[in-house]
Each structure stands twice: as structure tokens, then as C-alpha cells.
Image (tube, rainbow, N blue to C red; front, side, top):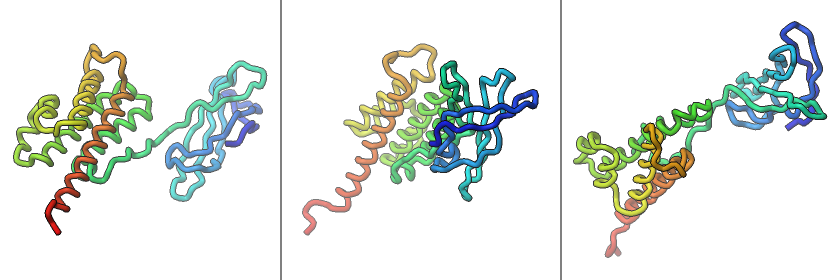
Length: 229
């Protein structure tokens, strides 16, 4: 980042003032690439000039997005304006193993929407989105393992579905606990007060990892049967 940048800002009354910024953005919040932004202008919010908005443009030809940097002057000896937020911001797509994406594309779609809600600080919606994503992940995997039971799986509550159709072991253990925390995100009273949405994300990640390992193991064992010369 460029430190100690001096810029000129326009106040609401039309005056101009010189400001000392702590930094300029060095990564585009839309394409997530390092860059040196083009400066379009700086504008004070209020004549007390405590808050300033900087308008920037990503110089990358494949991006060219315009975004706003919010600066705030905290009381202190240097009187510099500190960068506190960039907007708009496009979240990076969630990384999902290829096999999981094939089995449950709807999981990927919902999980990315939950990430978008989190980027927009819509924190009350993130857990609910994760809970819905989990249900599609579990049921799509169960259907892939038991295609003849598809209609029954679709209609079941998530807990009984996990109990009946998921393999014993780590997949079931992690999926059950993810369901408990996911339910907390949709209910008025929390049962697991010592855990939060970050734990839910971690349990979903573990569930995916165990499913992916299960699928890979099944593929190799099936493709390399014992007794074959």
C-alpha cells in the first residue's frame, strides 16, 4: 500500500481541503487482484470533514470497476484519515471439490449466496443460508448413494435423513453437528451458545472433506478390485 498519501477533497459547501490519508487501496474489492487504483475524486461527508469518501477505479482491463473507499479521521496527533471500508465488494467464489460440485450444484449456489450476504454484513442471514446449503449437500449426496430412495430422501427432515442414509463415521458425525448449529441459526433460542457461525462453516467444511474422501475411496476401491492380477 501507499502510505501517507496527501490528497485534495471537496466539502459539501464546495470548498477544497488538503488531507493526509493513511493508505490507498492496493487490492480491488471486485476482482481481488493487486493494483494501483486510478483516483477519480475525494469528497468529505459533512463540513467537519471527519469522514471522507475516495472514488477509485481498477485499472485492470478485465475489470475497470469503480469502488469507494471510506476514510475516517480519528482524534490523534497525526490527523491522518484511516481507510475503514471498501464498497462494493464481490466475494470470492467458495472453493468446492469438483466431485461435490457435480453431486450438489445447488449447494454451491446457496453457499456462494451466503458468502455474498456475509460480505454485505447481512450477518443474520448467513447462518440461515449455510443451514439450507447443508441440507442440499446432505440430501444430494444421500440420493447419489441411494438413487432408488430419492423421493423419500427429499421429503425427510434433515436429522433423520443423516441418521438413515449417511455412512457411519466422520461424515455422519460432522453433518449431525453442523445440523445442530444450523438449526440454532434459524431458531429463536440457541442451544449451543458456545458455538457460532464460524463453527458451522468449519463443520460443513469437514463434512465436505469426509464426503470427498469417501467418494475418492469408493472410486479407487471399485476400480481396483482385490484378486485382479
